[in-house]
Length: 569
Image (cartoon, rainbow, N blue to C red; front, side):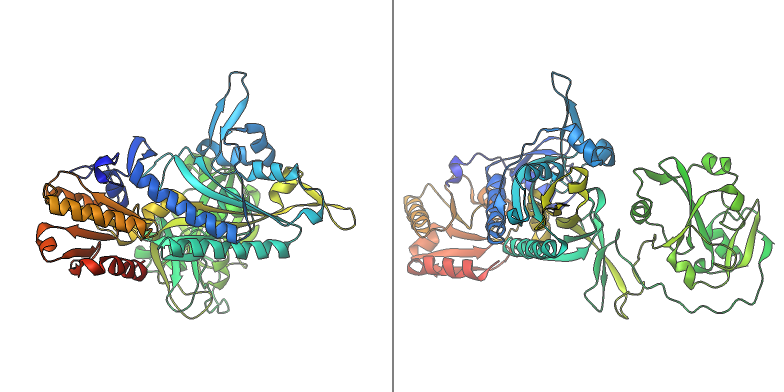
């Protein structure tokens, strides 16, 4: 590609609305243009990188024996109502009606439609296993799009689906997909971490995320400093074990005027937060719920919602709490049998000793409170978030936190969709059985953004060679010089003949403009053609993210270029 013919427009100054390095560089380089909030158009340089990413993913998916399909984007809403996810997704899913008043959706994912597609074909256990994938535009009505391609309303995604006769087959396909994903990310030059994850609106029993560690990321991951434990903060657990001694003191009421918070109780009573009972009220699908845990722990809305299996979960308003007979700031699950409320206790409470807890009376608390002796719950489960500094559940190590960008996600769905959509096969005895399903997704645009975040700075885009728009950029300086133009043209042709993906900046621009634009393009190798070097029968070659350049004889420029390409990621 001759840059003089390239449809592209670089920006002299970085756009003010850009929050992250990738957002800034993608806009400034002309790889993308914003259409509206969370919606972008790809221009030739950005589209070329995106297609290279897709080619890598297709290759790895084909190696995993998955077959490419293309599902319809516009889907009937009743399909999502059958699975129950129309309500689960709520306002995040785009809905519309056609001229005949039929309800339709523009979906963020395709579990329902692919299940229906397979249902229409599969009859017997002999028809499986099945593995299919597609690369398709998806939609999500994000309330707060941000960070360019990282959180958008319209996005390109590779979504894959497997169907098996049993859990053993699912496990095999699940592992095949993890391997295909890892190979794809490695070839795209991404350094990802595989972490345990919550299944969210997709559902299923097990899931894992591929996370690119980056300060620009929205996700928080929890890692052990001593072993391989890794999970996102919605799924992470920690070692809550502590020594429990036999109770020696009985329940005692104490005056605590205006001490309505954990902080005020801790400071006024000279008590550790972990020795105070935290009581939080939630509204779960219009039902008031009481959640109790240690005062030093934070409740995870995700874990709690998963346990309750509710569609909507929020912190209760004070009026909703008082309407049930509780006093905000002085409430607890002690002596509340008459209030008929569901009580959920975090499992950390079984490792506590004497606690401070609300007395369900204004300006009073109990001390010497014991879990089980003085109160219990309807359930005892893990509903709190792991934090940095907590103990690992797998070893004696300590947990650490990092920010990251979710690039891929894999799920073991089991039979949830096949049961709701009545997708069955006949086993060897002729008995109908539900299909056992897995689903797997990669964010294509996020790979591009993540790769930029990984190595670039705010002035220079650095992309791995396999997904950069071109492998080599020829910069012809003093292009009005016939010798420079001739040498650059010859080199351009020779590189093309050697199957090197090359661009040639042949514009009638100053060296400063060409070098500035080259910094924005993310092309890994620059070959500089100048009148001074031509006189010495040589070219100047430079790797994009390195300061130093090398002078190479004309006779060696092809071999040196190929040698550098083989040595860099």
